[in-house]
Image (spheres, rainbow, N blue to C red):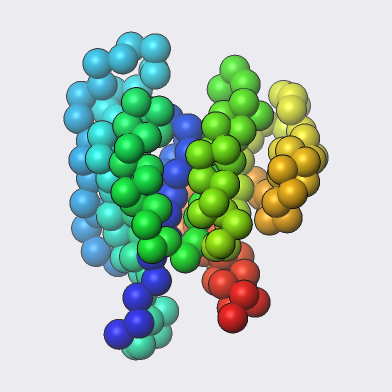
Length: 175
């Protein structure tokens, strides 16, 4: 069995756990605990990782890892990034400054991004609220990163599978 490690990272509440749960063929391993930071606006938060799997036929499998969103757990970001062949950066568009949120992950994962496939996903997208999708694409270009920036509902299995397809196409192109 050939296995590929895919990493889901991004801001708190952007949907990393939800995306993995939407597509995993096994019960997702979650390390959620009661949230002690009331500013996050959610009851539970991931403190170590999420893990799920998706089969690609009978011979390949995607191992899906989700990072904690809080920067105080960034040491886990580095641990989980080791060996990743693809990176999904989720950004919650409803946050105060989603471009700044994206910047945090682009800067932290810049070495991983340059060596792997990457897709930036805007979750909870509100087209009437700035910044527009184009602003995220421009930020990627300013950082000399030419990867897809898309909107998606990470609760929807088909949309998360589409995101994984975008990663796989890039991975194949690198080979």
